[in-house]
Image (cartoon, rainbow, N blue to C red; front, side):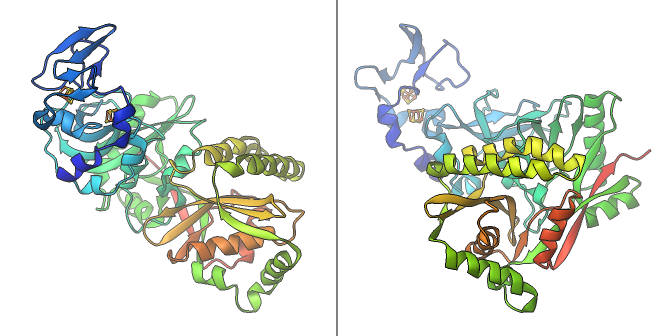
Length: 429
Ligand code: SF4
Ligand code: SF4
């Protein structure tokens, strides 16, 4: 708890006028043991000195004040008590990235009601209640989501960015069932799970059964409920338990050291392109930041226009029609989505950009890549540089090919060590 209190010491507090002032007389986040008094439009704590902006009882301030912007709250589904951080605090975005939050010890005492501005951080207690309510999952909840990702994951769906890049199309929610984080996605008329329940421990079939029950309640028999992006071993176990499975796609997995070195005959052509790029361009490879936003957006626009002209299938055309939204999310919100971005500049202009994210402890996934195809070797150079930059991960995943032949050929040129199948499961009949 001491660690948590240290994190709340903010320089911003001196200039901020949020704490100690409340919009109503009995707010959810009221300081325990202190009365509030009316002051203009607001209610202020009786221990607050409006002139100095200081607490007159600072050394004796209640626990809730000591830990704010953290708080202990009951989840909307009433099933858990969580440590949360209040996004209303301007320092919350920075504080919540600190890993020591997950190590902090805190009791689930006097939980307050959930508010829209709360970001879940850590489960403190299971209340044993069982309800059908789902809790909202938002683009601010990266740390919470990641705390449930099994370390051995290597499928792209086991990352926060995979889902929230597509936030324009889906509304996400969550529930903890028998210790596993279950994530649900809803589009216009269908609720499904975009990945299996997340837990470091093996997840019992009963958890999947409960997930199907909850989805059936949402879907009301209009559409068949499903769970997507299931790894092969889990799918086979579930099939053995009577669930129906269907193969979905395959993702390409490479040894990072092979992509770094590009050595040997099989990489001869790629090496040649990399060297050509290096010889013919005055270039730099830099970390993505907002100052490259316009350059990347221009490249994206031109890239999409070109790609649309050559789309070979309806699926490819559909993807190209919608993928700009995912790219824009990455360009605008890469840090909060847990994405690492890199930009390749040639003669000061954006020649390529790419975004990726870690999966578990051994794999890095390259999710988006856009290149100016008029610059020979730019695509090969930026991909090789990503492998060098993230060489602490043994493997690189470049996701699936969506059945697009040109994408498949491109991925095969790099000689994957294997492809990893992923499945969809349906409920027992
Ligand atoms: S809202 Fe955050 S930054 Fe503002 S006074 Fe409270 S703790 Fe400090
Ligand atoms: S006790 Fe102090 S810190 Fe807590 S609300 Fe009152 S004035 Fe603010």
